[in-house]
Image (cartoon, rainbow, N blue to C red; front, side):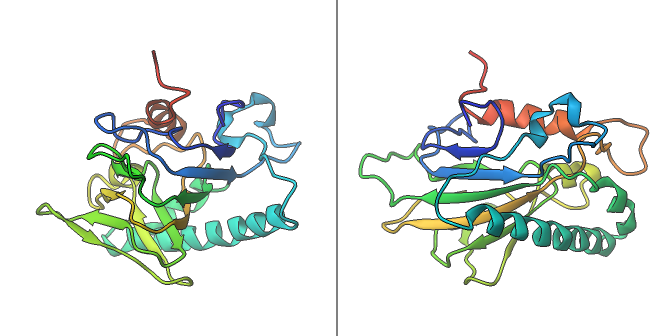
Length: 238
């Protein structure tokens, strides 16, 4: 990622810092997302949110498996998002045409065992909320994820393979005028390795994510760029 300037490919330990009061996260990641077709009207704009994917040569079938999962999970995530928004009294169908070119990001997280040198400022991933609408999180079933309760304190959250944890993100909180709250969470790390596969479900780059029904304007790409610039160590301002 540091070589390309986009969130595609591999990011090493310490490449992200989600909490400025904590040290960079010691996990490793691999990211992929939507690649525009050649005749897409915005293909020539070279937007980093739609950068070409960077695939390793091995293992065989890796790219094909992830691309198939990406398509299935984004289709499901849109249906789920519309249902969730409908459950708080808003029109879920409002979102249908906002995800025709989603900036959705599929990530593989590798959390090594908690290092012996770790301090109270070292995390697999420090306390944060996700940046987009919702996160569809698959894991290997290992413990480690914690969610902050509304009244304070933390509760462990885990799901076996085949089940999913759903996080709500900042963009959905903004878009729904606070009816849906973003979920603060963290991974401290344990004595065991852990793998998780989140799909960060984000809308088209030019979607207006200001509160529904308001006269405001907030383009989705600008919201994500601000968060990425603050998170990725190679993008952080000097």
